[in-house]
Picture (cartoon, rainbow, N blue to C red):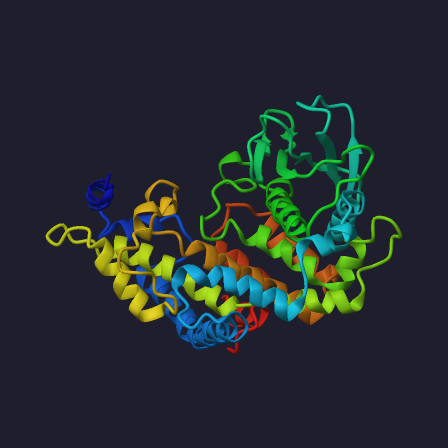
Length: 427
């Protein structure tokens, strides 16, 4: 079965709908609700990142080829071999695994540590509450208070896997801040993960990747809960541009790599000992393994998606494979075989809400890295910088353009330099 005719029909209908609404293309229509201002700005952004990352991505690939040949006798490395031999190379070079780190991240240490990070950053207090009914005994409720003891918001943590529970991790608001007749409604949210639960008296232990996930979802939660906007349509995460909504979540992940923060959220489950410095240095070294190769892969997806929608011409049809090959010629370092039909299963843009918006992932990474760079300059727990981020970004929700929020915090528009530095890519 070939779904290519359906893809062509989807693209044609999107283009027609955009033109009926007065837009030149579906890409222009998509940007009407995003932080990026024009198709030219998005394409320039993606091309600039690709130009900077591709030389290192080519070196990344060459290293895998050399390793596969020297250590495993594989002289002709194919596209389907790369993931396998990349992981072999990573283990060979850094000797580190998520399981090795797991004993240092008991949930009983990570969760209070997360709260301590937030309290130090924003001058808040987080405390458990038990007067609210929950949908499962594992679910715990907390509330966030400001320095004056006023409740800013409440949230539910549903962190552990169980039968019949949906997989994955996400945050959603269940109550939005709004001004009612005689009081302001306090926002509430729930944050859901699927960590391995405590079993037989043994504590729940998280991988470092799972710690990143928890911080990510909590960043979304803070965005929703700390709003000062009294109009529900633009309070919290509501009304925030699609390419900026991941800023607070990706931003929070940065603390999971900082020694000062790691000492708050980690400690060996049996001894309480901190992560040894030698292990921490291996963590950092492995963090950016093949980061350039991964970046150009995401840029390939982003450029393909955006050009597909920006350049659609009814007279020429969808041109799906043609545009994909053009993009690969420009940015890819890994070339799949000619019979590969990746586009036919690219659910994000044909069924998942990211049409002419896949670039948002990388755009938000730039915002996150550039915002965190200010903390690197002033100290990762600098309270003045924390208050600036709180007031400029978290509290204003969708009531102001995301670019204005960012400029209010950073004093300028975002640049890609911090992301490249954080990714270990020479700017």
